[in-house]
Length: 183
Image (cartoon, rainbow, N blue to C red; front, side, top):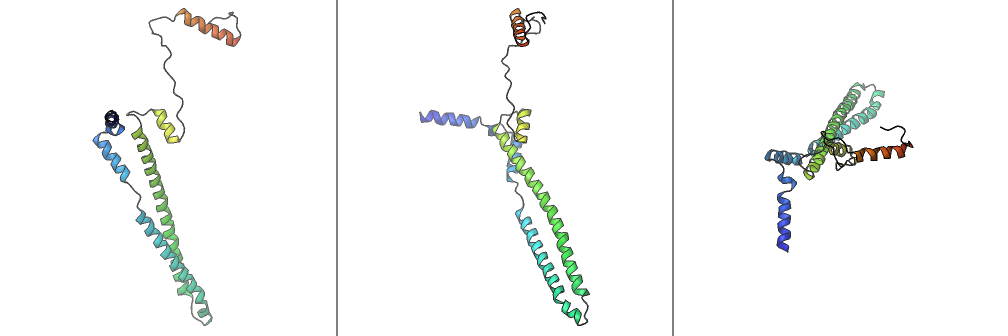
């Protein structure tokens, strides 16, 4: 009993989605799963901004402190230049860091989207229906499937009289016509 169960599980795994992929597809999937955002760069940017903030705060504090020197006849020009330079550097670096963070956010979003789509593709059949893909990307439920079990008529064969009369009967009951206008 257990042997049969193990054989069935092995057969299912043998014909599972991972066996549908070519070597190239497997390689691409492995590369996509290994891509991770660079957290060291984010930490480096944060440390740099903190350092620039400290420099700016120190320069502004020094400017405030040196106002006493101005009363004694010394110029405040050098402390003012130092404070202005520090604040300008902080601003420029924060703008650059903001742009890098924005770009990194887009990159991470693309990676997450790609991982989601790849995980979804692994679960599906070899071919993916367009409506399934669109519904997945939009986060909506797929539309109901239209069954094709209705009988199809051969182009060489005229429709049977049973089908025509039942359609006429249905139309007459829906519209209230009693047969005065037949199609």
